[in-house]
Image (tube, rainbow, N blue to C red; front, side, top):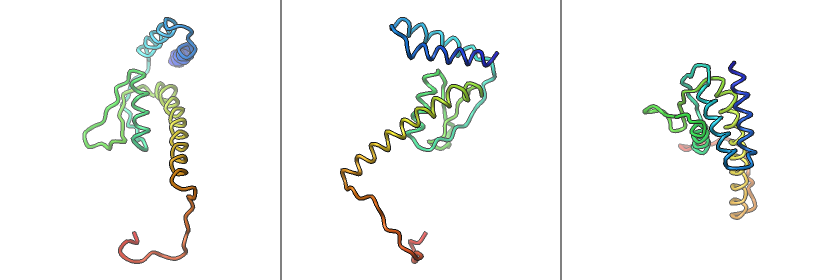
Length: 139
């Protein structure tokens, strides 16, 4: 059934990560590719709205890793990605992997931002003033 295939894919992913030799790794990757091609449930077109271009690049890389072909229709925003994928594969493999790497990416960006700002000036505070804005720039 569908869950058996997804469980097998997870096990093969674990084999790839801890493969001792390049041959073992390649065998595990080939096994994963065969499993991915044998996904049972129907692929649907999903619209994925992503918050910024960094996250979109990450999502696209994960799609390509799994031999998916993300795309975007003319006039769709740059932060939109379309992908044909089964719901179970998206929910159990692609999206959790995206979230895991997105967290790492966000932590790295926070660290780099803090380091750059600390080199500019240590004080990041701002003063909040009571009152209302007035004039043409009040929007």
